[in-house]
Length: 536
Image (cartoon, rainbow, N blue to C red; front, side, top):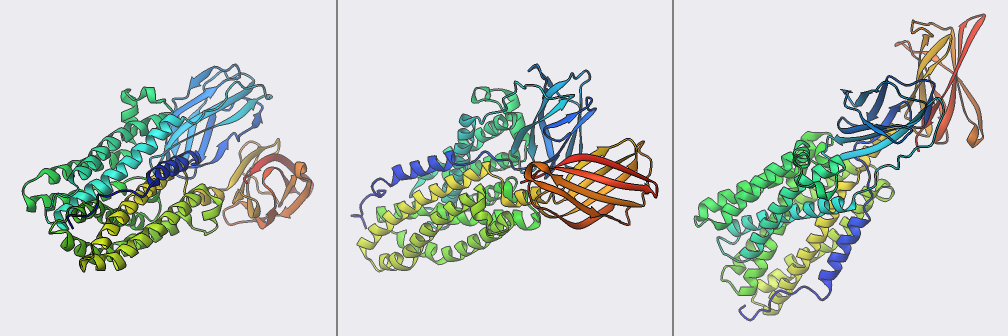
């Protein structure tokens, strides 16, 4: 064993790894997590007078970070008076708005800790030119956030997992300690900095603002702040276990660090915010802890084999015995997360989140194939004393390590993409519009607010908001720009007093005209008309 060659990565594999990681980051779309489902007034609407309130409805509860109104002359005013009603942010409009096009720019943080931003336009009286160009993606902040997330993963899986492997599998052997210490340091730096980068991303601030206290307080104030705090404690505990001379104490500290680090990942993020949380958070925890058990042992075992350490074969045997069970739990937890997050198989091809998963799956197939060869081919030969197999195993572990790094890069890219389950939630959200006429008005809702079979409902009232009990109500839909003429459907009165029809198909997305023909009496009919946006 002493004549074993030093561990070397296959030629060019390091450069390929860096290139693929860079491509994965740059190819990641800047998409939202909580999604805007409705606004009042609707985006692009022309209203006769200044509204008293503005409303933004989202697919999940949010907390506003910054709200501002850009006026037709390009000046901006901060909107600091607002209230939260479930998933809707109701904003008080400042007095004295003039005619022309206004832009409501908003930035909120969703339940999973990720910031979401956007803007809507509405015009008072008539549209005018707008000088607002919108918010561009801050790629330096985005790159820093992605890099810090990869560093956090390295600290947990290679660092904390490596300390656990030294204490429990290698029985106190010191193989790979420098690498593990480096990973703990990288993880600690990445975890700490990620709080500031999270705050910059949430506030829409540049990297130059990293020293500002608001960046750190905002980042720690999101759900990701809990992950940062717990992960920092876990990494510190792993450091204590690594330098401890008391073997039994180091074992239990390393186990505590492993549990805490895996728990940290379940405190924030897409999967942890999904329902049912009693299933999703434990699945994230199990997924993380089994990865750490597997990945953390790779480098220490490779270093033991390299050095011809007397514990090498025993450590390799222990690892080969438990790793199939660990991988089985890892895969089972991953399948649960996949089913909830992706939902429909078509989403793997139709969404950025699904595309990233397919890249990750391709890497995992290669990784699992290497692991299988190592476990059922090379390990037996190494235990039989085959030195050539030992060299091959060391090189294979090096390749496994690089593949794991690639997987970290792919996984970190999910930070910037919404899971398909969130997109499905948005698609299921209704579209609504308020139509006000002289003799009648109505709140009209289309469920879902997407093309296809839908249900239309209307709460009909008198023009002065008093109760109205018409004899008959008919929905009339049309889309002149798409060449769709009138689609008429008679409504029936439901027990809650609304008028509904489910025999309705709206075949196209876009801005639809909707009219209600309200038969008030045998001799009086009121017609009110408006527009409603049916999503793509």
